[in-house]
Length: 248
Image (cartoon, rainbow, N blue to C red):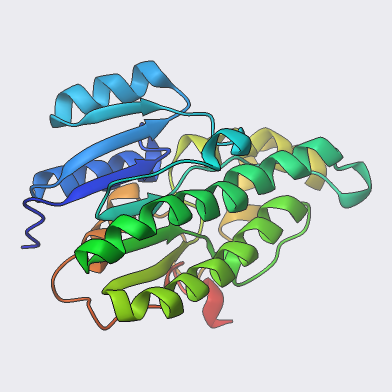
């Protein structure tokens, strides 16, 4: 089992979905976990359960993050939002918002965490990307752009951090059983002109060879390994959990 005793982990979007599963896994392994989430009440409840700390933060307020300094050994950039819309109808402000939360904020958090990681000679940066960081789908211009950018940011972090004992990797799942995915169903039905009950089969599960959603705990199990003692030579990589989607 991975032993994270003495390690400090920060998980954004940590109050639900993949972030929650990662936080729970890290806490079971002995880490002290900070739950960073825009929903302060949910973050506080989970932090109390795990014996960790809560940090209510709006990651879209990138100006507030610019001067930040973070003391953590493990940083998980997980927070995200989604918008499903054709490009010609895509709200420019929503496009900008998604890039702020899902690309600019991870950059600023990495920037804030690296000096402490460098000083200690050890650090793990995990970026929750997506199969959409490797493949595109229609009607998701901002999300796909942000995830592709996150892949590049992660690799640069890996190259710069290597001599300091810091690794950086992406996890790239297909659709995960989370509130973010559930909220997409109505929009997917609208843009594709199909009933909501057909979205799972006709949209979300068309590309994976394994016809089911990914469970948050499956993503967290990989995250736990990537921050553990046997992954020191794994950096600049993108690990798919996509049921074979990217094999096509």
